[in-house]
Image (cartoon, rainbow, N blue to C red):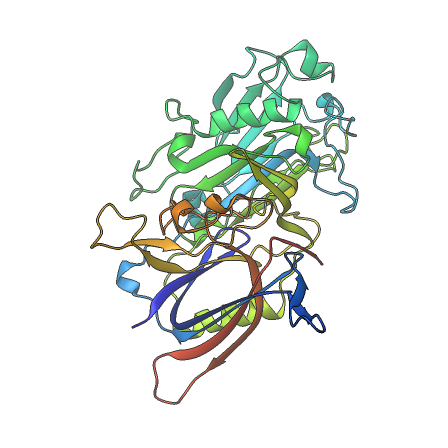
Length: 431
C-alpha cells in the first residue's frame, strides 16, 4: 500500500507522489574516544546533525475525472523597479525608505493593464486599463468606459504627502508603495461597480460580469524590499484555465505613441510577474510527472535564498535572525518558480487524536534551531496533514530540496517506479 507524499515547489505548487518505502536517516557527529587504563570513553557532541530522506515508489496517472484546472496568478510590487541590480535591490519610489529613483508624478496618468481569463479567450486584444490620478477623493476608484471598448479604472492618490514624495498619507501605511498597493487591491476586489466592459464568461460563477471582483482576487503581500512593508499586490484570476495566462500585467510604453498620451516621461515600471499557472486541467499523466521532475532537478535555479536559519524559540516566542519568504521570486534574476523547497510526508498519530483507538494524520517535521524539546516532538505537531507549506514555519513540513531523482519504466506498465533523495535544509542559497 502506497503513502501519498507531496513535494512543494517555490511557487507553492505541489508534486504528489505515491511512496512505497520511506527511509529517514538522522545521524549525530559524535565520536567516542577511549580513555586508556580506566576503560572509559569520552566524546564531544556539538549538535552536528546529518539528515537524509530517501523515497521509493510509483508514479501514476492522475484521476482526471476529479481534475478541475487551475487559475493563473500574478503580482505587482510597488516597492521595487522591474530592472535592477540583483545584488543591490533598489527602492522604486522616491518618497519611500532610502529613496528610489521614480517620483510619483512620473507615474501619474500612465496606463497599466490587466486582461482577464475571459478577455484572453476572446483574442481581440481587449484589456482593462488602470491609472493613478492626482484629483478626487484619496483612495477612491472611478470606474469608466474609455475609448469605447476598454474599461478604465482611475485611482486617486490625491494627498500632499504622496504627491510631494515625502511619505504615505498617514501612519496606517508603512510606505507610499503600501498605500498604492492597498488602493489597487481594493479596486480589484470591487464587486459593486461596473467598469463598462464584460470581463467574465457566460459560464463563470458571476456570468458576463462587468465587475473586477468577479474576475480577479487580490491581496497584499510583503514587498521584496522588507522595510517597505506590504507593497505588493498578489492577484489571481478567478476563472480557471490556460487563458488566464494573459501576458499581463503590462505597463506604459517608454516611447510616446502617436496620440501623445501614452507616455509623459520615460520611467521604469514597478516590479511585476505576469499571470502564470493557469491550466485547463491539472490532470497529469505519469510521464508528465516524470518529465516535470527531470526538468526541476536538472535545471531549476534558486537565484537568491530560500528559508531561514538561526531560529530562536524560547519562552514561546519564535524568531529567526535570517529569513526569506520563498514565495517572493525575483522576476529579473532568473529564479525558478518550480524549485523544490519542501516535502510533506504523512504519518499516523495517536497522541494528536481525541481517541486512543483512532489515528489522525500528521506530517513529519524537523524542528531545528534553539528550540525547547517540548516544541519538537509529536506532541507539538498540531497542524493538519493538509496544512499549506510555509518555508518560514517548521510545523508545516520539512524544508529542503531534491538532490537526486531516478525513474524506471517497463514496457506494458502504466506507471513508473522512482527513487528520490531529499536533503533537509533550513536555508538554501545559490544561483
